[in-house]
Image 1 (cartoon, rainbow, N blue to C red):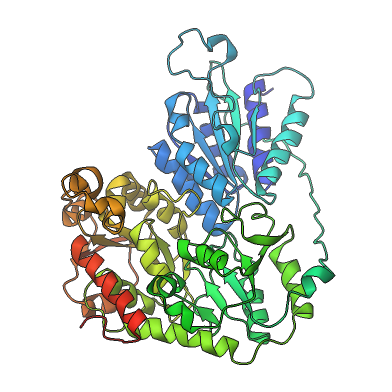
Image 2: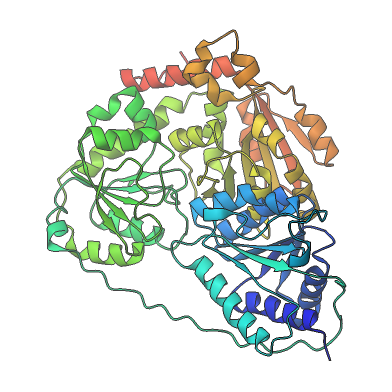
Length: 559
């Protein structure tokens, strides 16, 4: 007969599997022993589609799981030992909470008799992540109560289901474990009944008060997407009714004939005034990368309809007059029937803005924006992960992909920690993957490169190396020249070539854009580094020239 620990943990693992958990990221540790061993046995002998990923660094383990869950849109489990190891999940948990990703943090713990009395490697792990998780629960695995396994089957499946319910988010399951920790291996696994959750799609009817707003001059604003379930429908509706789509770089709608890119630059340069102001904006997705677009909407007093269960009450600009707690799909079906004919020429006038932006950057040479221009030629079905700070802003403004490329970033909490690990999670099982990153974000997550190497992912790491934090050169503190470099510029003097050698990866330094144009067409085989060296001061001047060219209506941004 199996001991209680082994039996209960088998029910626990199978309950996670029953609700769709197919990936677990395990970090080695003593307290995880019975869970890790049984999970490995389960993957090897019971359900071979269960994938186990090893990550020594718990912070990167969290972000690796985040990358898998975000891009594959599935729940992913994490497993860590007790003590500070579990705390290292906090950054990834925070990002998952804000960007609605179903991470399952399984934190193994010391039992109650060792809590609060000075036992080593022991913290208060219950509700460790506070309000950043949708649910925190402690489950006893060494219980002799007759209905323990039934409780595990029910409570664990319910918790995983909750993690995936909109608005989705992470949960924590804390497992206090007593020694001896070795489970019984090789015994028969029990059957666990899958709990079925049926959710009917509500039929949305547009209220009459809102229907009257669907008059001429309607525009879509497609912010960062947290799923890929509605984009084709959104594009079809926009095309049918001649609606412009202000497309965020992460909206998963570029390229499209109705897509309008570069709104931040259009607003900052002032040339947005050349285009007709919409009377109503229907907003999808998360907070746009462009900070100026919401300011512009507020300044122009444009009515806004906020759509999506994940985004009700998530409008920090407070301009949304209508917040619809409905799925994007249901709304688009109703909108398609209710929208009125649009103002003639409204779409066409906005489409010219895309050409103005494209022509303005067309002559860019080897520079931050020039690299973005070259990356527009990425082949179809490429996955691109974009680091925060300067990179995401340049891609949002100036990236006009020619083919269907899926773009991702950590735009929940907008941190630079865990960028490489998250991109590695994205790249698992996919042929062609790129990471666009600055030298400081790369330095911040060099441990993630070991994950990429060990997982043997195909990942081009495109590093813009301007020796420091480029974004700060655009902010007011850049005027404090006596303190700026030490406090904000923070140069690290990284040798990307030596970093590549450390991970046995090929390295190329780009000296002209023609080199990059060729490499963009060449998928990586394993890990590959491509470096472009730029200058922070020159980058600021280059951006100012582009904005001046937009404002002046010229295309000579390099002159």
